[in-house]
Image (cartoon, rainbow, N blue to C red; front, side, top):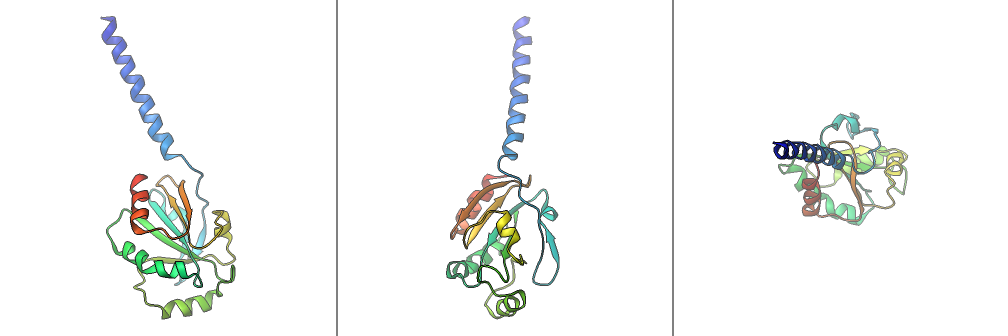
Amino acid sequence: MKLPLRLLMLAALLLTFTSCSEALSENRGPAAPDFALPDLNGTVHHLTDYEGEKVYLFFWASWCSICLSGLNELEELAESDKDFTILTIISPGTYAERNANEFKAWFSTIDHDGDFIVLLDDGGEVFGQFEMEAYPSSAWINSAGRITEQRTGHVTNDEILELMNSIR
């Protein structure tokens, strides 16, 4: 009779540890800094608006040839059926970027469908908060609001999807 009781207690203990390890894995990585940034139409987006969702952040610049060559690919991803939000961030007036009005005018002339959100990080504060060092840069944020990965350089849609599918 003692053996089944011990097995039951062991099973309960293992279940508890498994639940804790899943919770801990969701909390790995630093908390993503919240921000309040306007999009090209003036609507302010807070990262906390996407609480409970996975978010892919893409930091880019209009003068960056690598960034520009990847915009069509990013647009394809934005149009696809996915379970995460794509936010792109530009820093007008800093890091050799045009000011906000010049950027908006320039962006309206390039070939794009407008399927991804462009946020204006005037002064580059958010770029600095995420400790980005170059363009393009990316950050993957899980549904718990934690940064699970950061990379500098071009990232393919397959790589973005692989990482997004690996997080909750």
